[in-house]
Image (cartoon, rainbow, N blue to C red; front, top):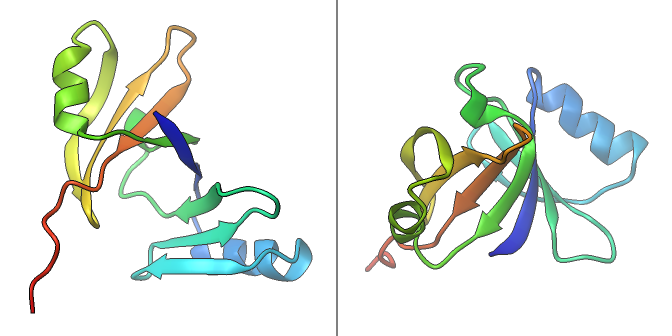
Length: 118
C-alpha cells in the first residue's frame, strides 16, 4: 500500500478550490469533471483530493487513498476487514473503502483499467 491522496469531501468544490489555491497557495494538479480536483502538496508526492460525493455514506468520509496492485484481490484477501460501500469503477481502475478498528475511513485504489487504444 502506498499513500497517494488525502481525500477531503466538500460541498462546494469551486469555493474550496479557491481557498486552497488563493489562500494557501497550492497548485492545482488535475480535475475530474465538475466534482473532483487535486492539489500538489509541496515537498511530497502525495496530493490533496477534493471531491463532492454523491451522498454522505461512510465510504465518502475523509481519509487516505492508498494504491494497491488490485483492489479486487485485496478485498478477497482481507475478508475480516469492515468494508463499506461497494467496489466502484474510478478513472483508470477500481476503488474500495474500509474502516479500521477505530472507525477511520481508508480508501484503496488501483490502476487496473486497460489502457485506451486509438
